[in-house]
Length: 309
Image 1 (cartoon, rainbow, N blue to C red):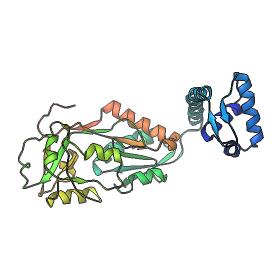
Image 2 (tube, rainbow, N blue to C red):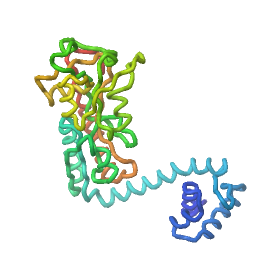
Image 3 (cartoon, helix red, strand yellow):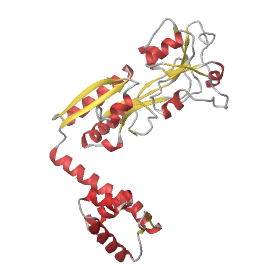
């Protein structure tokens, strides 16, 4: 059996590929790290690292060992955290944000269940903006954000809200009177763009560069906020695919919302930074999943049954 320090030394060196940095992280000397690795290699019967005066690299055997050990070590750490959480309870403060007013009702249900289960943990709720949603997760000012998928670079939980897509057009636009339209019409009109700081995967999903058949979609101006983007639509500077919620939360006499009959639904739910998967975050995400399972994600169908789930 390997000792814990031996496993930690091996995995740290496999990550750093530098004896000095490994020793610094472990709080030991480089000689101690070298001694442990040599001991492991004798036990294995072959080299785990290729090293010279300029570089350190994993051998094929070392890489395979690292790949096998990482999930086992992570699983042990998770088991210990769960045991600790169970004995100590969930306390402290959880900071949750929502992006868009339409996500607030689903968020409140998850918050209510979390508070019921963990009354000693304080929950702080605030609204995020398009311009700071990602930054707030990265800098730790927000632990969990209720937002649209995909949200690249972040972990995503069970969807709490599912809705159909519609196309926002000026009220006097030729498409405004249509019962429904296809995504192919995007090739014929500029599409208003999201701010540059918005997730790349999100923008590809909401404002793609091409239609399903491969026709290029012209880009319109970008807005700094969702309200500003709708104003650009009203000014006739472009159209914008949005969720059905917009019809209810942003009713405007200068904008018409036309169902998109061949677009997939939009899903929204908890997103968080993987490196910030604390006990509080895990329990909140679990509460959100339980709410979705017991009640089903809140589904807002587009006008006119389009036959999509």
